[in-house]
Each structure stands twice: as structure tokens, then as C-alpha cells.
Image 1 (cartoon, one colour):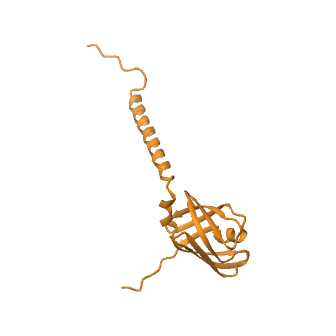
Image 2 (cartoon, rainbow, N blue to C red):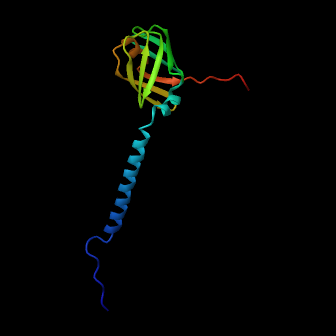
Image 3 (cartoon, rainbow, N blue to C red):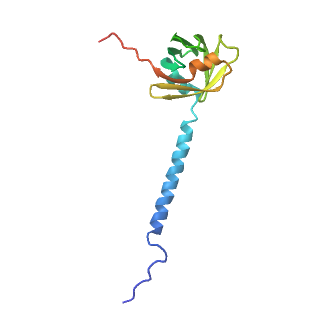
Amino acid sequence: MVMPHPPKGNPGQSLVSALSGRALALFFLLLIAGSGASCRDAADYAPLVAGSWERSAAENGFSFRGSLEMRPDGTFSFTFEGTAPGHSDSHGKWSLAGRDMTFLDSSCVDPGTYRFLVKKETLSFLPLKDDCEPRKNALTGEWTRIKFESGDG
């Protein structure tokens, strides 16, 4: 009886190559899909940031509680309770450009631009360009969405 010659190289190599090729294709597909999700239009983010937010902080021996109202019409207001040196109450307008939010208010001469992130019930601001220290001190950080309880029940 004549035995056929075994294939040269690793017999499982073609299976491994096929699986690696599929994994690589899946990786690129997810990469493309993920990058599309990060290119949302400003209109996609506006409903996520609109609402009432609050944060509490303690800095240099002072503590305060801030409230931030982001309205769907592109206006905002923030107020602080407690002692918060360098923080000020303000109101003005906000606008979106992708993942960046710009604030313009009467307390500051120039607008301030921030990168924002909404994750579940948290809104975070990271200053990209803002020369107005009171606004930067007020906005920078994490804000928690305020949920109002209805009296119906």
C-alpha cells in the first residue's frame, strides 16, 4: 500500500491562516464602525447634554455645590452655593461642533471651548481653550444629571 505524502509545513497552518484572516477582517470592520460612531453630528449630541446637572467639589479648604442648566435652545446657566473662590454664577449660550462645546457668556470676554463626554448620567468637561478662569473653574470636571421625582403616583 502506498501512503500519500503528508503536506509540507504545519498541517494546521491553513486553518490558522484562515482564522487569522477572519479575525483581522473583523477587527478592521469594528474599527471602521467605531470611527463612524465617533463622527456624530452636533445634533446627535445636543439631546444628550440638555438637562439639569450638578456637582460638588472641595478645593483648597473650600467646598461648593454647582448647578448647571443646559437648555435645548442653546442657552445655559450655572450657579454655585457655598464658598467657591474663582467660581462665578453665569448664563449665556452654548453650541456644539462634534465633541467640542463652546460657551459664550456675559461674565467673560471671549468664548471658551471644551471637549465633553457624556457617559450614562455623567457629563464631563475638559477645557481646550478658555482664557476666562472663573468659567474654566466652574465648568471643568464631572457633572451628574439631576433626576426630578414626579409627585404623581
